[in-house]
Image (cartoon, rainbow, N blue to C red; front, side, top):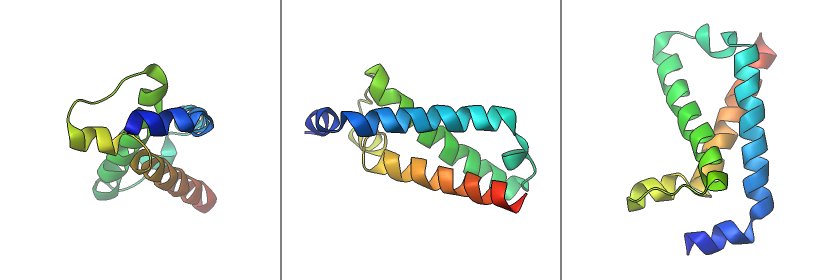
Length: 97
């Protein structure tokens, strides 16, 4: 069923991958968006970023997790929610700086 969803939404997959690539480049350009946070906020944000960016790159590469719960967390809609949340946090941090 999840394979059918992914095939129906190729534009969403491409958009998520391009957004993840842009966010990764932005964080390489301005690492202070995360590095200036206190450690208690920085670690969950790093975890969210790893989840969001990793899941966005998994589908276009043809990778799929074997465990049900992990596969569910790395495919839409949960991967898109994580990517959106991570994007919003970075935009808010950039606006505050």
